[in-house]
Image (cartoon, rainbow, N blue to C red):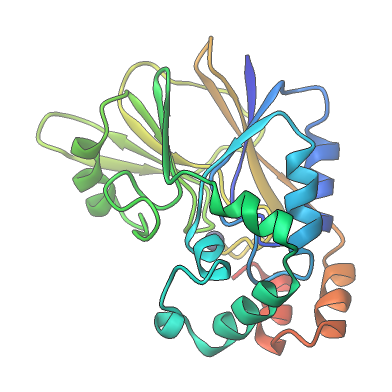
Amino acid sequence: MRILVISDIHANLTAFETVLDDAKGSWEYVWCLGDVVGYGPDPNECVELLKTLPHLCLAGNHDWAALGRLDIRTFNPDARRAVNWTREMLTPENTAYLEALPTTFVIGQYTLAHGSPREPVWEYILEPIVASLNFSHFETPYCLVGHTHQPVIYELLNDQGDTDMVAPAYNTMRQLNGRRVIINPGSIGQPRDQNPDAAYAILDVERNTWEHRRIPYDVASVQKRMAKADLPERLIARLAHGW
Ligand code: ZN
């Protein structure tokens, strides 16, 4: 079975639809690694579109924030404003959907978490040393995470914990060969690697092949809806730059 692996949609319906269109025909099931909402202008639309797909979805920190489960004083003021707006906008049905999301999932050879296997909702794996410390926190060969909005592969090289950081090779199938890896597909709705294009991946769980992909979407139309919703200027601007 081929899996469409997505993460950090962040209420960006245009990017989400563009990814589904681009990935058409190359998957049978969706694994969503969390943060369906927060930042963007379309929280209900994104939850509702996701619900129409055969999928499983994890909870991310922004999903929890929108539910009021988190103390958002640690969020920056712009993120806080977006959280409060999202909370007001979400319908009771979509709030209930987010309420029910698990924080980790283990399927076959794959462990899934939003942030990291060690701290599923919170931890950012942004460097090899942090990835290295996480390999002892899951038992499967492979782990998939989101949260940083940066596509990457961390590969465990030896028993000493040495870990390599491998940049994504887009539209190229990588054979997972039993060597332990932590992989991030990147973010659909708010990429932060200086590339504004929506990121996702296709995983074949029988062949264990992984393919990172990128696709440009109509950023301006999302920015227009954000301005209309009076969401923070900085959050609107960052979409065009991928940070
Ligand atoms: Zn996120």
